[in-house]
Image 1 (cartoon, rainbow, N blue to C red):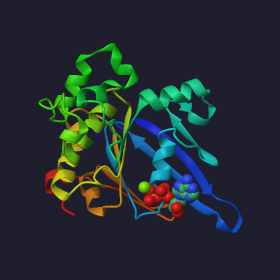
Image 2: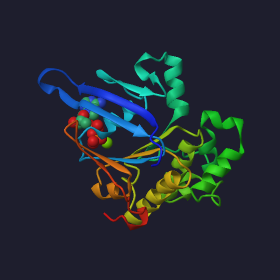
Image 3: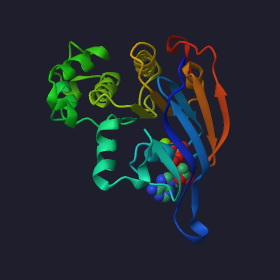
Length: 237
Ligand code: ADP
Ligand code: MG
C-alpha cells in the first residue's frame, strides 16, 4: 500500500434488528475506511455483525444511523437510481454460496453482469484471470466448488468494481480449494491492484491481509496493520 486513497469511508454505523426485549444490536458505532488497492480482512466469530456490515458497505442494506461515503458521495443521499447503479456497477459481491445460475455455463454466468454486454472479451478475460479459461462452457454442475467460486469471482470482477466484497468466500469449501480462492483473491490485489475485502470467521486468513479489523458483538474491537502480509499459499487453518 504505497498510496492511501480512501475508496470508502463508513462512520458511526448502527443497526439493530427486532423490537423491545428481542432487539439485537447487530452493529453499534462501527467506523472504518477502506483504502484503494488493499486487502482488508474483517474477522469475527459468527454473529459478530460482519455480514450486516458488508451488506451496508455494498448498499444492500441501510444503517439506522451513520454514513457511508464512496467517491465523495454518501449512499443514504443517493437517489434510488444512483444507489442501484452503485450496487450493480461499483461493488462486486462474492458469497459463500457462489449464487451461480445452474442453467447457464461459466461464460454465461459471467456475462449476465449488466455492464459486460459492452465488451464480450471481458467475460473470457475474467475467467482466464481466475484460471478457468478451459471451462468457459461448463455448467456449474460440471465444476468443483472451488471452480464455481472462481466463476462467481469472475462474475463480480467483470464489472470492474471499485470494491470487491467477499462474505466468507471459503466458507463452503474444503481447505485446499479454499486456499485456491484465497490465492486468486490475493493475486487480484497484488497483481491487478484491486481493492478486496474478505469477511471471515477464520482468524488465520487475516495473516494474508494488509489490514485486519476484528469484530465482536457489533463492534470493532481491534485493528491491525500487517507490514508484511503472509502469502496466501502459506496460510493454514
Ligand atoms: P456474522 O456475519 O458476523 O455472522 P451477522 O451480521 O449475520 O453476523 O449478524 C449479526 C447479528 O444480527 C446476529 O445476532 C444476527 O442474528 C442478527 N441479524 C442479522 N441479520 C438479521 C435479520 N435480518 N433479522 C434479525 N436479526 C438479524
Ligand atoms: Mg455472516
